[in-house]
Length: 234
Image (cartoon, rainbow, N blue to C red; front, side):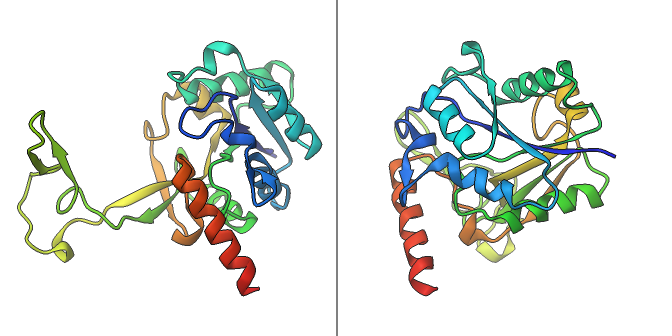
């Protein structure tokens, strides 16, 4: 029977939010939220953190995860995270700790409002459908056919997608955002593929209130606001 193994990829360098992956959010390192969500899953057998940072590794070990040392060439600002996924899978395969049929679950640090039920929902969807990869999606408030634009060198704007002309937002094709709640696939697909959309990708609709992806200082402030609001309502 296939094992379900969680991975979190947390490099030490971060330009948008310095030390983002271990920055305290409501008193806890950001990484800890991913580790706690995975720990409660009814599917996940074990959790590995791939990192080049000593402090990140310390947080991982203190929260019951195992550490994969991430090479410097896979930790730069320009590195492709898919290659880090492949590296982690290859490390476990070579150590006899994973086989190609095992389930790979990426649990990013940047989605701290995601909970265990969200993880299990995406894993269940993957296991229940014939697809190469499953990820969370939420309906977008903006559409490239209606109110998303591009700008030229003179700051003149035009619609991002102009294949058809729409005059009402209600008439445009539905647009969806990819969340960073989780990405679920197999070790085999990681080794053979080159990106999350390179095969048949299943989108699983998730709660927008828990789908915040932290990439900027404003995102951090918004996450704190939402967490405090939820605590106040308990």
